[in-house]
Amino acid sequence: MTSEMLLALFCIGATLLFLAVRRGLILRTDQEIRRAGATLIAERDALERQANELEAMQAGIGAMKAKLVELSTDKLVLSRRGGKRTAASRRFIHEIGRPEPGRKCFAFRLVMAPGFVAQPDAKAVVHPAIWRFENVAQVWAADFAAAQMLTRSIFHEGVGVTVSGEDAEQDAVAGVAAP
Picture 1 (cartoon, rainbow, N blue to C red):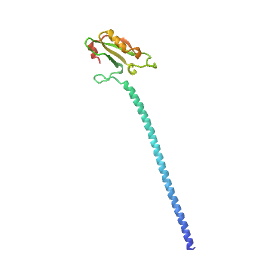
Picture 2 (tube, one colour; picture 1 turned 30 degrees about the vertical axis):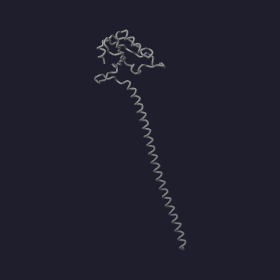
Picture 3 (cartoon, rainbow, N blue to C red; picture 1 turned 180 degrees about the vertical axis):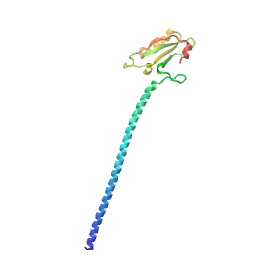
């Protein structure tokens, strides 16, 4: 073998060795890219799961907020001492007029007109949730007839409230002391 042949074989071998090393580097880089891609896909899937859980929690929070708004209309009335009254003893008092000399306090029971809320043009005086409990109109007037007229002019069938019955006349002191 001549030196030229050896040089040619060396060049061919070096080229093949260079190509083999290059191929090895390309394959290693390809594997690193695939591993990084798999890691990124796993992280993306984990983030999607967390986003779905977050959306579910936000929907739950929205539902709880809606429930809280609904419950805030139904919360218990606090007594003057801060204790809670039972739901059965809840009473909403609608005051008409004010105590003045010569006026007496009259009380009338109020109820929502049956089927009024179902009417398409129904406009209740106040939120319908309070009408599930006892409602009383305390009217300050000179006499019973004036108190009855005043009550019926404010609470009538047109606004969905009826005066179901008249209670006994209360004197001014008892009307002021009532909670």
